[in-house]
Image (cartoon, rainbow, N blue to C red; front, side):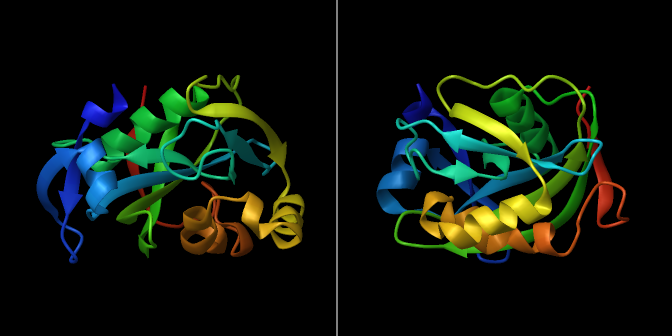
Length: 182
């Protein structure tokens, strides 16, 4: 069960600092680590999905990042590969680490390890997490967020929108090659 998952806690300097169950992390809003992966297709479109209504944080909202919490003992690269595969079926492509960002609100607080990848395989939704999705151009995504910012996960908008507006992509020379999730 997801509430029993053991999540990696991180200190304010972005270093691992213990662990706690997901239920405790949520109940006490403990600082933890997450991954966020922008998935591009070869045409440069970004995959945008809608979270299921049963998600523990931001249920039913749209998100342009795949990702999730790092488990205790898991590296960011391994967590990103796991989450990209679990949520969207993305696998067998290099993930390029493009940065980190901090986020805090009344619901959650974390350090986020950010990645981009290009994927031309089938998208396979994890039914517990993803209700649907579509490929969007940068312009379409920016317009959708501008038209209804409340329909998008606020942490992705705050921490990763610059990756959309600045033209981040796996071929843009940002970051470093960090994992190959084959």
